[in-house]
Length: 129
Image (cartoon, rainbow, N blue to C red):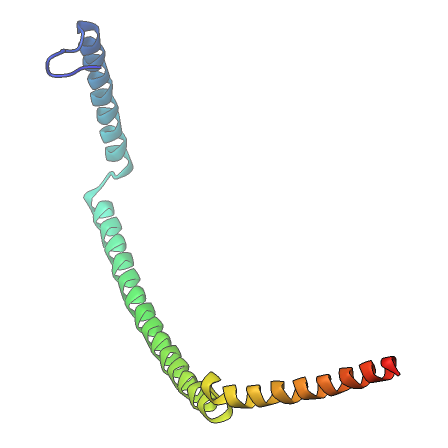
């Protein structure tokens, strides 16, 4: 590993220089291929115009899609809000809270307990006779 206090060995420097030369050669070859592919400036201009038109079309399409998505999201939000309000209203009208239900529950449990005590008492009386 090389650090400022520990410079790389000369072999590493030579390898790096060779790698840089290879990269330069590859870039020159690529530059030549590009020149061969795009022979005239007119063809290049036509391609750049096409790319710009495509980019513009894509942006317009994305803007329209975004508007549609926002409209759909707004509709969904309004629908959910209204349905939630209806559900809350229904819950308030049709159901009771735990506090309202507590006395009724206590009465029902008390009545069941009295009935069960009477039944078990009658069974015990019958068994003891």
